[in-house]
Amino acid sequence: MKRSEINQIIEDAKAFMSERQFFLPPWAFWSVDDWKKHKQDALEIMDNMLGWDITDFGSGDFYSQGLFLFTIRNGKFNVDKKPYAEKIMIVEEGQVTPMHYHWSKMEDIINRGGGNLVIELYNSNSESQFDTTPVNFKTDGVKRSVNAGGKIVLKPGESICLEQGMYHKFYGEAGKGKVLVGEVSMVNDDASDNCFYEKVGRFPEIIEDEKPLHLLVGDYANYL
Image (cartoon, rainbow, N blue to C red; front, top):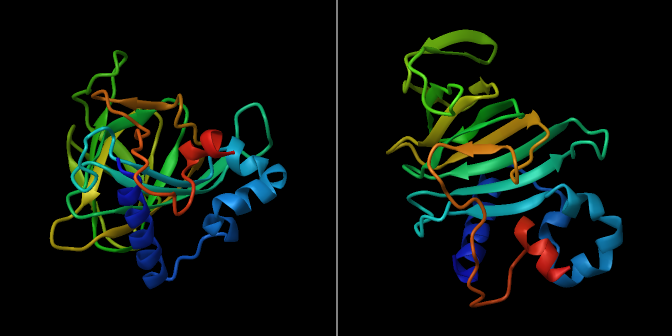
């Protein structure tokens, strides 16, 4: 992805979150110079991969297959005491986050406003393939079930609890607008806890055609 494209995605995300009255912590808006100044006091942010995270999953087409995320808080296994994480995400109409599950993380996905979020579900088997059994889950504490590959639609205010090993793919429903999506979960580890059904690139290679507006989580090692 080009840095100019990433910068524009961040600007668009800022505008949408402001419109939805969702506010990020002050360090979200630090420049590279601010980061260098506060680096020693902000090691948790860098070590636990908090901050801006934009991916096209290696597709080359962010708006077809991609996701905007901002990790607000996160612990780290066997390092600190925090056992939880929180993210905010923006999902465009028809913008796919590919089918995947987590080995360790259990999470709630929440429609925080905007359009509707469509989620497709499968159980996984011992070979990490799709199982044919019905998928049992809860939305806002209420038991539900769909057949393998079934879809559910989360309207604003609704949420689903996704357990370990539960394959899920999601995108914004066509004609309903972009979606502000929250995630509340156990500790998040994107480096080792994602099992994608088809191989994808989680973090993009960046073409530096302009300076970064804000550092991505993948930028910390290079810039700091």
